[in-house]
Image (cartoon, rainbow, N blue to C red; front, side):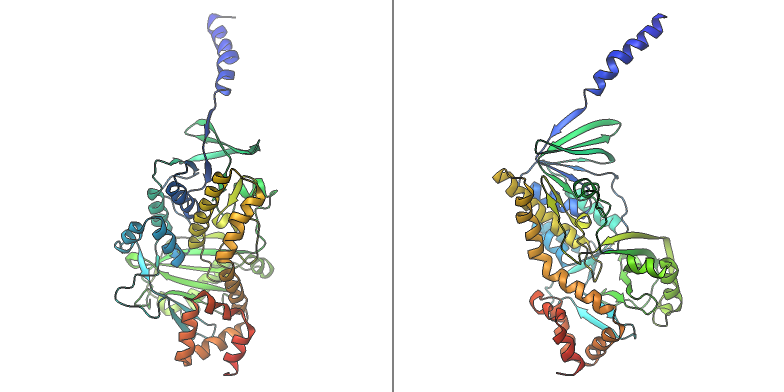
Length: 438
């Protein structure tokens, strides 16, 4: 063997095994997989509580995320709790964030029911919601994650997740180097195809109630509300689903459709063709798109709906946002629930650390039960409304009555701002009284 070959042989025998044994190993109080709204919400409050944590994100920011781009009052609430200055920044940057003051429901018969988010609004009132492209919003959140308690690995590939001796061990490949992160607490904030969900819930990464959505960006859509109301159109061409039109900054509009996956499969629906057919042919919609142009591609994504309670935690792990199937069954909005669940996850982790208890039973009590106590009634109501929207005649009847009655419109408007009043929407007696003028 030549001296050169001998040197190579020695390298293979000695150096490579040494490298294999020298994988960097880092211990931390919590690992968060995913840096979207659910992961950002978790990180904000872990930092607020002084809890060191590591965030692992497969993409590099800024990056796009297919979504409806509407942010509800829960988004505003969580950001205000994290840092009130952030919402002031958003409210003062209308080139990126457009304030939304209400929602318009359009029944299959074309009647419009406009619901202001704040019926008793004053000049001092702040917008209760806003719209913004996820490319902008997620990057805004990502920039706010910077903290002495937060270390972020962008562009990191997860190679393995396992549990050993009450610790989660996450092996990642980052910038060509392997690294093992060890923690008693793992947060799955990694969306509807969650790796954490697959690992810890025996491969069950498909919630029972799934919807599919398409999103397109249009420029030049006419007839938008003067106060940027978001629009949900329950068109005959789309049912049992809806088409949305959400105004965005800079003259752009997010247009999309959402429908249950089961319906798409059973009826063999080409959702893209159905959406474009409605835009081109529906008598109420088509004129508004006469001078509009599609900007980019029409893209789709899965929507795990919160129509029934599911397990969101277990020994040493928590699921948040889409990974926990927390999308509103009626509006399809998920950003607010993602941020809110992240905040509650951080609060639960703080209690785990204080009590040195990371068991599934403890996490169910401190996280799952709290999430459903805070969001459960709202999600049940939205599930009822989703089912109502499938009954075209009843939906038409309710909107017809509200269209003619100022008092009924005001009642429904108050229901959308008061969760106790909104519970009436779940009761058959409410619709009976509307239909029979009682």
